[in-house]
Image 1 (cartoon, rainbow, N blue to C red):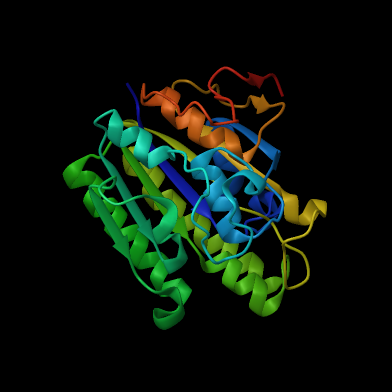
Image 2 (image 1 turned 90 degrees about the vertical axis):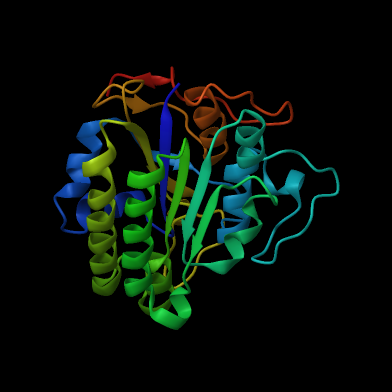
Length: 263
C-alpha cells in the first residue's frame, strides 16, 4: 500500500510549468510520469472541477456547476469517504474555503484552512505548505490534499500568462519543492491543477481553460513517461489504487497507474 500526497495548484496552465522561469518545473517532469494535455471538466470552474476530481464524475452527474456547492440528488461516495471506509487516514490543507464541501463529516483525520482573501494568497500558500509539512512529518497520513490558490487569484487580478501570473507560478513551484523534497521517498506525489485560464477568466471549453498538468511521482510511475489520455476524473481512482482502497461503483475515471507510455 502506498501513501499519497495530492498537490493542486489552482489555475496552473500546463504551458506555464516550464515557461514560468523556474527550472524546477522541468525537473518535476523528469521525476515521474506526466501529461501536459490532461483535461478537466466543463464548466472549467474551480469548485465543479474539484468535486469532479474527488467524486470521479462530471458536473452533470454531481450537480455542482458554479462555485456554490450543490448537494447531490443521488449521492455517491467521494475519495475521502472511500478512504475512510478502508481505514485510511486523510488530511486536508487549503486556503479557499469553498473546498470544505469536498469531504463529508468524519472522513478527515485533520483539516487546516487559512483564508487567502484575508491573509493574501502568497502568505496563505506559505502557511498551507508549512502546516502540511509539519503534520505529514508528525502523523504520516495515508492521503494528504494540499491546495495552493495563489496562481488563480493572480490570474483573475492580472491575467493568465502575464508577468505577475508567471511569478505566482514560480512561487507555487517552490512550495511544491518544499513538499516533494522531504516526502518523495515515502509518498507517491501527484501534482495537478483544476483548470487553466485565459485573459482574466476561465470556465469555457477553450483549450486554455480545459487543459491541465498532471505529474505522478513514485514507484508506480516511470520517469519521463507520458500519459496518453488523462482526465481530472482519473485522479481519485488512481489514488484509490495506490492506497489499495476500493473505488466507488459510480466512479467514471480510470486508474493511471498502468497507462503511461513512452514519450
